[in-house]
Image (tube, rainbow, N blue to C red):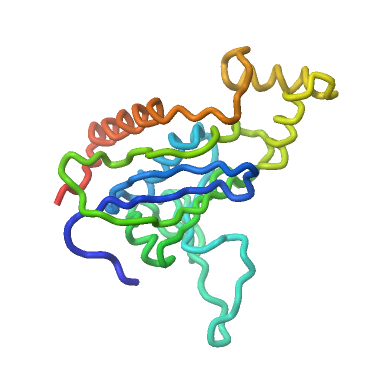
Length: 221
């Protein structure tokens, strides 16, 4: 594995929620030295997740058919919180940086959240630039649409909920409307196209301060 060396870099990423139509995506800047455990926190904020389920990172699509290389099936690795590592292919996410993961996958990686609903995110490296001392650990540049609601049944379930919300005559309109209102804490109409970049960046800033308070300091070299 070739890991970029030298001064700290800021990585521009495009993170797409796989199988979302219209696409749900985020454009982020994240320091390359950020541990995968911290990247997990960044993605939770960026997509509006609540960190209520299991997650993992991988250097290739975890659902793609495995193809032999030189007659052998390559080892499938995944990065999880250290306390969840049980299988031979498990690695601790705390011990791997974003730079290291993307180097393994030639600029691409995957993040799965909630193994039941299986929200799979494809992470693509767009560009790299030297970091300045004032650069935040993570920053949202833009994106499209709000993230799906927790426990909505994966993309098919979420799309069904959106269809029922949009049609007062839908047989599940009342039930889904009540469920969504309870989820988001308001009876205001649910707008799946809304994305508040400024609010997300405020949350990212506070999450970084929480990391510093716990002693997890970014590398400013």
